Image (tube, rainbow, N blue to C red; front, side, top):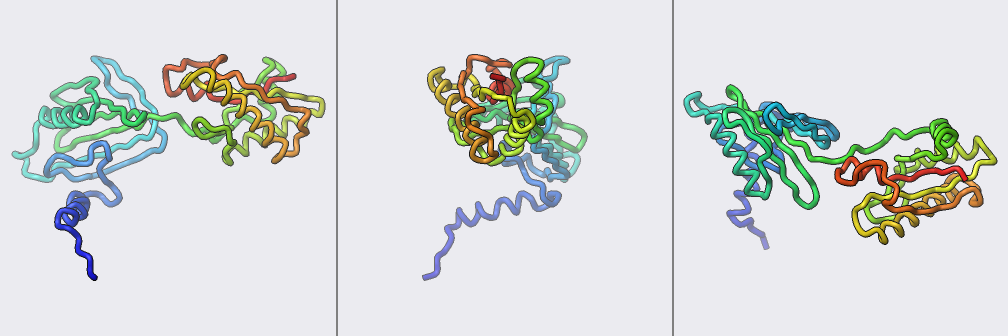
Length: 275
C-alpha cells in the first residue's frame, strides 16, 4: 500500500529549500535563529569550531566570548523603500531571544543588539548588527577549547624538578566517568617517556575535579580517575606498577575559579607528583 505524506509535513519538508532559495551555497540559518526577516538572503557565512568574538556589553565595554563561532551576513534583496529600519531589526532579535528564555545584554536601537541564552547547560551569545542593506549576525556557542597539544616529557621533568609536580591536561574522561578516553594516548605516551628516561623515578598520579557536584562524589571520581590513569600506563605503555600510585583530591586544590567554564576546565586535570 502506498503511503502518503500529510500536507503539513510536506510543507514543512519544503520550507528549508524555499528559505534558502537565493542563499550562498552551504550557508544556512543558525538553529538559534531558524527564521529570518523577509526579503533577506544569506550572502556569506563562516564557522570556526573554536573562535572568539568581542561582544558589546555596555557603553564602551566589550566582553570576549570563546567557543564555536558562527558569522552570517544577510543581504536585503527587496526594493530599497521596503528595507526594514535598524530599530525594526534590533527589536526583532530582542523579541526572538526573550521568547526562548534569553536576555538582552545591551543594545543600541539605531544599529545593533547583544544577547545571550542558556539551554540545557549550553550558553550562547549573539550580536545582530544592521548596516546599509545588510544584517550581520555573530553567534558564539560558549565552550572550552579541545586541547590537542600536550606538554612533553621534558616539560614534565622540568616541572617535577622545579616545583615537585606537573599538570597534565591531555588526559580525557567523559563527564562523571573514570574510563580514560582513546584521545588521551599522546599525553600518556609522554608520561611513559618521562618514566623511561629516569628509571629511579616514582610518581603519584593525582586526580583533580572541578566543584560541580558534591565533594564526596568528586573525591571518589578523582580517585577512580587517578587509578585508571595508572592502570593505563601499566597496561598500555609497559610502566611497572610499583612506580605508580593513584590518589584523588577532588576539588580541593583548584588552580582557577570554579565560577567560569574556563576555570572549571583548568581544574579538571591529572597531576604528577614526585614520590
